[in-house]
Image 1 (spheres, one colour):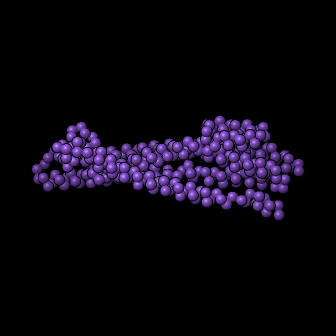
Image 2 (cartoon, one colour):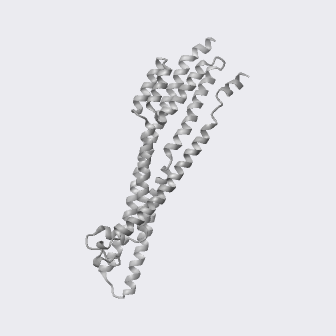
Image 3 (tube, rainbow, N blue to C red):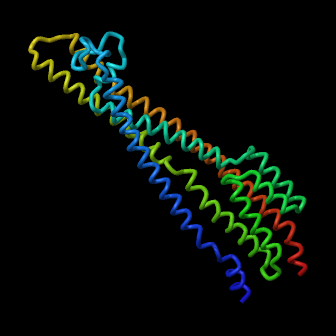
Length: 290
């Protein structure tokens, strides 16, 4: 009966999966719309900016680009260029979105300062003050810590469960709250990591197509034309440059955001450990005497 009452007291949280599913659906919709809009913008830039007539000899996009006109040179990279531009824009958009999300997850003040404040409040048995600090801090870390503190209060008033059971209940509450918060921090990182791998391959594919086109034109001309061949090869290598640049930017962004998420996770673990240890120290003796 005692265990059944304890389970019933911590049972009501069925709304969390629905909220998480709704936020997941919103994030997925954002990702799809961002990719589509990036593709449309890339085509517009490719056609009307890079392919503007004033970038080419005789104001004709069919001719070679003017000497030193890099926009025209990029345009001559071919149909793979808009795809690579889409990937580059997606890396930039999702990097900005992740930066804003992770910054919001940190809260209003520094994480170290917040964790230190929570520890001080716990050591002075000021649970209400620690919860108030969470409300001021906001963000994912504060949400997890607040959930643990609310469970701390609940277990502190419970006179039925043993100390070990109370500690396990607090630990479970922190783990569940962490499991709800962390997926939102990691969303869209898989897109960035995928672009990091695919962008280089797409760039090489564009280079291969360009080389095939250049050598095919050379074969049809009959007479070797070193200038035409060099122009064709340089245009083909534009794709490689775009692909490698996009991939490098995606790798840097992915590693940067992964390290920031690891810092948040460490802060959550540190705060959770402090909550559990403080509860065990402050309530263990009382339970044993009872």
